[in-house]
Length: 500
Image 1 (cartoon, helix red, strand yellow):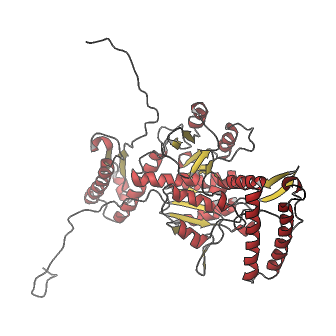
Image 2 (tube, helix red, strand yellow; image 1 turned 120 degrees about the vertical axis):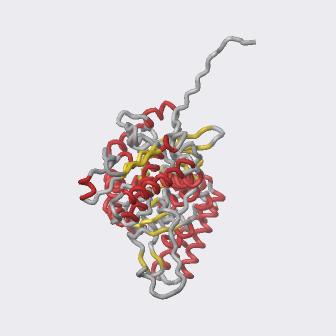
């Protein structure tokens, strides 16, 4: 009664329900790469994780695609295409991410296109350090790692970040492209397995082959997106291609000289917008004329378009992970799903070729992306790099466990410094059981009943000793039966005797 000193009516509210577990996010990837810019108004975003939800936001903060440095030249009387030494593909990868179901993600820009150098291991390591503060992230993707001379270091650094430093996220890797058309499929896969190391294998998943996408059409390959001719030098001799004395040859030489002069004037006065517009108009006119009247030029443009559309699959897979999580749940394997914006994989993998990809002796499985007639191009594998482990063989099992661990860990913070007694133990046990029962009802845990799906143990004499309590330790043991994918379905047919 000591709290009441003034006559009147007093109201007290009591909590009817215990603390609940707020489910952690499961599909928030972080992309590390090189962008055109990295600014938010006057604030630099270079090296800072920045959350976006659409391609529009990406272009606002990080700019557009690079001016692809392809060059056309004449070799042995034919029109040849020289590829850029440093491809920057993060912009196109983000298009594939959103096209395949991606939504919220983080971007860490570690440089811009003026660097003219591929992404380095130090840049990735610096970005990973910044991502340690972002607890929401659940996937790490470095799509441009396949172009880097530090490819091996990037793989091991990302795995260490996911499996040792953070322990709440998974890495999606690409296998490097074949060096030439004569190489076997196994060569780049063997190299990947050699350089990826052997630590924290359950925190990584790899996909192969690369994809011929439809991000760009031939109309998108123009002087504003691709540097087609080297105007710093002399005009290439197109006589063998256009024909000696042809009107198109004369037009090309005149237009080339005119563009060269306009380019020199625009470079000398970079602030003059009229000169820049005149240069763009002149280049566009030459491009359109050649495209309509020169089959060799049109073939070269198609080749450039195909080169630009050739992308590794990691960003597409991050989008598929997101879509599957949103539609079915993190416990559904991200496989048997069609990849959007893809015309074909670079390699046609059959059942025989996939045997070693899916079940290698060392367990470092590489998931295949395969075409199926009438069904499209599908992800046909759901294994982590820890294929020899019965616990962590499947991507959805690893990701489901990370989801459960993170959710329960965040909820348990409310009980830090609470009395280490039976009341606290019961409250925590009920909280975790209610959460796991909700997951079981949605198909995330296997078992005909909740008792078959999970168990929660806590208490003196069960998970703790008297010494544990004296030292301030509260131990909870959670047993869960995570549903695993039906990877191999065997149907047996047998004849029986006629019965009527």
